[in-house]
Image (cartoon, rainbow over all chains, first blue to last red; front, side, top):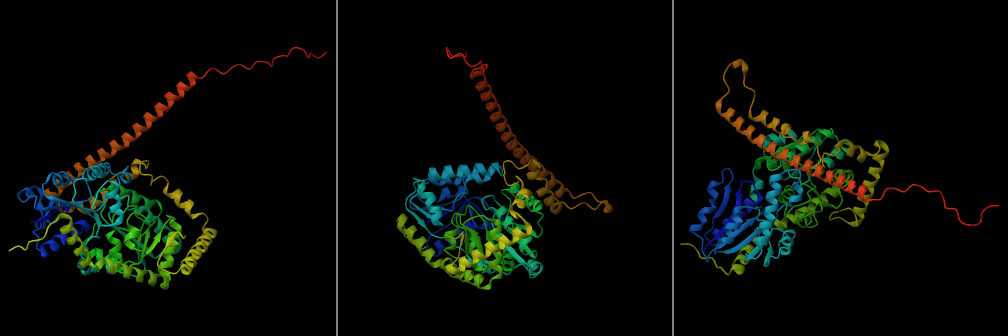
Length: 362
Length: 150
């Protein structure tokens, strides 16, 4: 009796990849034989996964196939064709509308993904979502037996030593603002830049903005952002691109505020990371963001960049305000750190929803 | 309801909101309509479909990458550039050209769509012109019988 996972790409440092690895380890600890099958292995990850073509050897109606769904891929069709019991973990698909004029390729992939998601509605025995926001997506498509269990996060990754170079270079008393996330039009880095523009130009010239995240899928959006910075005559905007774990830790450690203007988030791992580093958060009220914050941080409902810049300034200069916000974030972080509760729920649901019991391997 | 929320007392939230309003007003007095100035600077850049082609070309994005990946060969040393980076360069350039082609096609598609819509509108205008009756010539007011002035 085995529980295997399927995901299109297993990448190091990717939230979904980390979740899959954590779940695999959990399943193995609890007596299930468990592997991760992929369409493509990311750099340095070949030892952690197998090509999905090799799964046929172990496929059986006695086993469970867990499909991580976040984008259209051949895995959807493959899992649908299996005799195994089927479980989906849905991580959300960014609506294709965001990619019009930015990336034709991503537009079509996202659109195809939505179609695939709709077509899988009747095939799953059990579904998990990282957030209530994602659950609504599935139930609207007719999915049943859908449960919300947050992403399993490996917080030990956040304790790696920070990159000293970054800390030395930027830990100089200037106010450092940060946003972490793929450079993508739904994440609205453009709005973060516009908030920073007011803050830097009219409020505090000794400030920087770090835009951390890869532009690999949407380089055109990256160019638009760079043009925006130029047109606004802004300096001290650092596009860090894709970073190592040590660099990421360093950026969080030098940050004074995390500004998120994203309009579509299925979960928002960087929000939890910012809480971990006690960086006060200002975030736009959209997608799963309010749910992840759970009342912590500062949630804005209007995109008035000038007013948000003033709010940011008050958050940074008013110690009382800042410490209350961080205190609420600390309390919220406790919920996400309770991994044991999420793990038990996942296991219980898999056992209950699929009728399986683990068998300790000899 | 405020335009922002946080886990602090309502009084404090209200005080922060008031302070923000005051600061915005004070800045407006000093700098004028700063939002209008920002909008002018941005222009149509963030209207992704309508942004100028040259604004969203790959050139600048890639130029930066090229500098990192392919440092200028040292001419003084007189050595030929190593083969591997040259091959890599050619591979990257081919890929970029393909991407640029896809991008050009998408812009072309958008322009064609607009041209088609324009020609449809022109046709409609012609049809409307041809179907409506020609404007009548203004006739002098009819004389009513009787009532002639004497």
